Amino acid sequence: WIQTTLGGVFVRTITVSDTNLFVGNSGDGIFRSTNNGTSWTAVNAGLTNIYVNAFAVSGTNLFVGTEGDGVFRSTNSGTSWSATGTLTNPYVYALAVSPNGAGGTDLFAGADGDGVFRSTNNGTSWTLVSTGLTNTRIYALSVFPAPVGYLLFAGTFGGGVFLSTNSGTSWTAASSGLTNTDVNALAVSGTDLFASTAGGVFRSTNNGTSWTAANTGLPPGVPVLSVAVSGTNLFAGTDGDGVFRSTNNGTNWTAASTGLTNTVVWALAVSGTYLIAGSNGDGVWRRPLSEITTSVERLSTDLPTHFSLHQNYPNPFNPSTTISFGITQISFTTLKVYTILGQEVATLVNEEMRPGTYEVNWNASSNSSGVYLYRLQAGDFTETKQMILLR
Image (tube, rainbow, N blue to C red; front, side, top):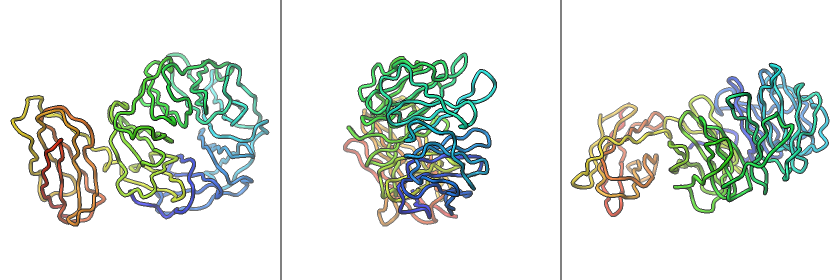
């Protein structure tokens, strides 16, 4: 990870709108970048509250939820903001946009203490839609495509997840199997719904009817604060252990925090070819997705005669190379890349693996030319080899 020029702020939320990257934080308002974080501009004109908790995008409208002054709207990519209609509870922690049956969109705002508000006119007016919500501390909202229409999910602090099938008019509990009910974020990946909680990640494959823990590889007991999706990759930001990645819908997780010096990650988003992370006090970080989304391919299930680490190919390489290795028994396996001075630059494998022959690709597009070491550790087996990146 590399820290962007926006350092020293507490980032609460991140969103992408067209080619613009926006971050909202506690005490400094909103910043915009047009180059994935290389440079930033404060865009707070008209914003009377600079404690920002949530974003939502609807066409050319950008909405932001604040801590005490409700929702603001910008129609010019954040250059200026105007307050929307009055909310009876102006402490807004979540926003979501959903298509409605009339061909338009509904805007939803989750408040801390009154539940969910709905607007059918881009925030000009709001209606409280909390019937059935037995917990009204809303920290997350997510829209899920259904065979007919859309499902709306609300994540609460202490009450788990609730589901509405009628645009918020009524709600039912949807927390069966959710053993931790402090929900920080919700995300949709394919046909699965994920909830990040104070007790890890949970997955639902049946529209919230039931949930199962999806925490293998995550630090035990560490709260997960944020989630993001990029294709088949799922990312989780934790409270003190950085970022983790799953390529199999949360069945297993591997660490993806190399270089991240602040490991409290409140927000994650995908912007172009980068994964963007918002930290607790150290601003915004970014990392090329190509570095993180390395996939491990199992070439054969035949049992190798011995543990092995093979020479990478091609070698020298520019910018990517393939590393293959063999595992003879079920082992927790790591494959890491280091500089010649021993500084870790990439984690390619970090999970329990079954016997077989594997290969993994490393894309070093963000690394400088030189000699690198790659080390395989599987159970008691350790081997290290050299490779050369030549630009």
